[in-house]
Length: 242
Length: 242
DNA sequence: CTTCGACTTGAACAAAGTGCAAGTCACTTC
DNA sequence: GAAGTGACTTGCACTTTGTTCAAGTCGAAG
View 1: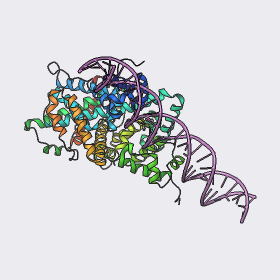
View 2: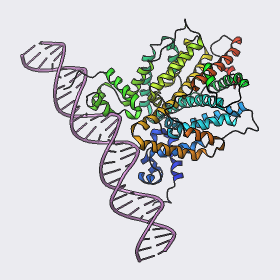
View 3: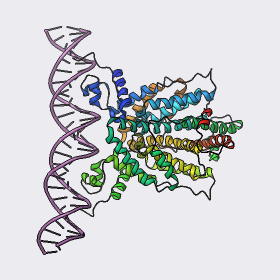
View 4: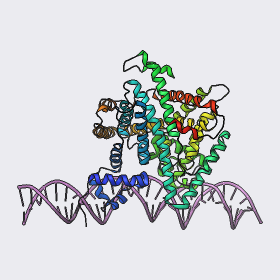
C-alpha cells in the first residue's frame, strides 16, 4: 500500500515535528520511516544522512523569523522584536540549539549565525564595524538564553516521558551536584532554593531585563565612540575599552 | 598483566582528556577502556553510565574557576575576571557546552548555572533580587559565546582530523547555507566575506566588548533603581522596564 | 512491449552503550 | 595456612541506531 511518493519537503516537515516533540535524541530514522509509512531506508534516497536531515530542518526553521520594518519602528524596538523572535524560535525548536552545540550547524554556522544576528542591527539601521560587535553581543546573549531554555526543555521531556523513575534519576543528579556546590558556601542557600524549584513554573523576566540592559550599554558605548569617526575598519581603538 | 586497580578519579581524568581532544562524540567506552588498559566494561563498576561519567567530568571541570578576592578588586574587575574565567573554561572544554545543551548537565543544571553566575555578582558584592537577573544576563552572554566557540572548535577538529575530504564537506555546507541566506539580500556581502574567513585566524575582541557594554547597561539600570528600595523580593516593579 | 529512471524495500553490517555470569586477586578470619 | 569474602575485571552477547546494498516495483517514454 505505498501511497504517493515521498517528497523531501514532507520528510523535512515530519522530521521537524519529531524533533520538536522529542529532541535530537528522539529523531531516529526508523521511527521517522514509520511515521511516514515507509521503510526507514526510503528516506536515504531523498536525504544524504541524518546530519544532513537535521541541517535541512534547521535551515527551514531559520526562515520562521523575519526582519522588522524599519520605516515604522525605531531601532531599539526593531532590535528588541528581532531578538525576541529569535529567542522564541529557539524556544520552539530546542533541538536547534543542541544541533548548534554539536557541530551539525557549524560548517555554515559561523556564516549564518552572524548573518541573522547582523540582521538585527542592519534592520535597525546600524552598519559598519561597530554593528558587528554590537550584533554579536546581542546574538550571543540570545543564544545563551536559548541554550538554557533548551536544556530546560530536555529535562521536562525526560520527566514527562518515563515517569517516576526519571524523577528519581534527576533527584540523584541534584544531590550529586549539591555535593560539589557545597564547596561554595555562599551559594548554598541559593542552591537549595533552586533545587526546590518547580520546573513547570512560569519563567521570570530575566530575558527582557538583560536585553534592555544590553541595549543601554551598547547605546552608551557606541554613542561615546561615534562622534570621532565615520570609517568602517577601526578595530584597533576598541582595545582600550577593555 | 592487570596493573593497580582502577580508580574513579583516574577514569574521570582520562575521560576529560578524551573529551577535550575529541569532543562528546569522541568519548566512547571502548576507547576509554583501551586508554586505561582495561576492558571497556570495567569502567561500569566505577561509574553508572556514560551520561553519569560525563556529568562527573563536568563537575570536576567546574572547579577550575575560582572566586575573585573582594578585598583587593572592585566589583567590575571582579565580575570581569569571573566571566572571563568562565568563558576560558568553556573554551578549554567545549564538550561541556554540548553536554549542557543535550541535558547531560541539566538536572542540577538550572541550579548550578545560576549558582556559578551568582558567584560573579555575590563575589562582587551584589546581593538580592536584582543580582539574580544581572547575574543571569552576564552568564547567558558568556554561555552564548561559549556555544559559538564550542561549535567553532567542533569544526576545527573535523577539519584537522580527516583531511581534505572534510574541507570539501564544509565547503558544501557553506554553499548550501548561502543559498538560503541569499534571500536576505542585505546580508549577502557580509556572508561572502564570512565564507572567506580563515577559521584559524585570531579571534576578535567582541567578547570583551560585549561584556563591558553589558556591565555599563547593568550599572545604569541597577543604579537607576536602587535609591527607592532596599528589600530582597521585589520582582514586580521590574516589569515596567520592558 | 521494452526500457529506463525514479523510488522503495528487507536484509545485513558496523559502531556503540550496557548487562551478565564467571572469573581473579588481595585481604581478613578462624 | 585454609577458607572465604568482597572488590574488581573480563569476555560474551544483546540492543539500538545509522547506513549500505542488491533486488525489487511502478509509471512514463519510446
